[in-house]
Length: 332
Image (cartoon, rainbow, N blue to C red; front, side, top):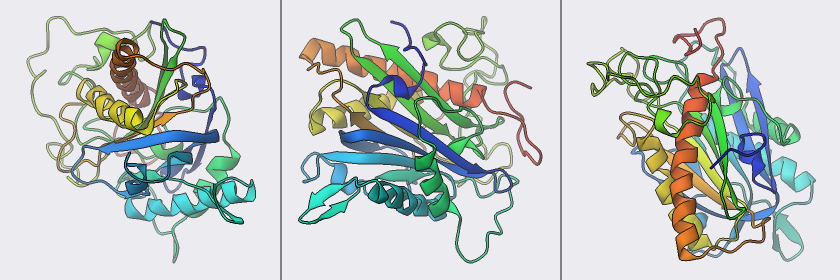
């Protein structure tokens, strides 16, 4: 397997991604915009999620497709980003048709970045609605990783987090891509070493090329979290999107979202904790025109795991150092 030409989620046909951030705030918003409504599902495995419009994504519920998915900083304040994304899409004439009215369908999730050195004194209303609107305006096939969008103020145990993405081209011509805003309670490296836990899945040197450590460091199995490092235990969550250009049903999207969580387990230790709101949104654009048999669906699911793990590692690898940071970056 090999990555797509951009090694981004936008290698999946029918998707663009936009970022908007406020450097003084140390926070931002990332939005995945579907060229046309895409089949969607979601699976939450963290114990402290913050979400919008996730119930409608269950396979037994009516709406089958979404217009966009947003990922935002700001904890519960960041849910306002969905209103900004919805406003931008409404102006563009997008949405679920209900009689003469169109309602843009915009699920999303937030991470906690309120205690990261940024100025959160925003006055009466938080800025996330405007950031969500701006993120849609910035949506393109190319977008920045690291300290941008929802990854602007993200932190992990001992390192700045960030926005990561990766893609994989399968032998049957299907593409799968992942997007992750990495703000985990746990660590993405083996103990105190710089070696990423996702190293077994790395393609080339997309996140440093160090490979697996040999021998394993003595602290490789130690549970290193923000709590061990004196950070607030609630200040976490990795929020993600897995996407493919295959033709999938809503139920198959649900299964893809479930399986993609294994990418967290391969790249963050520990993951899915009571203090993380870990979530995967799944999108199927169908632009390849390819339907999936059982064998190919197994391959697609396995690739979702490896692609998600790579995206998470790339988010931390790509983080940039900035004034007022409370954590160092991997590329120190």
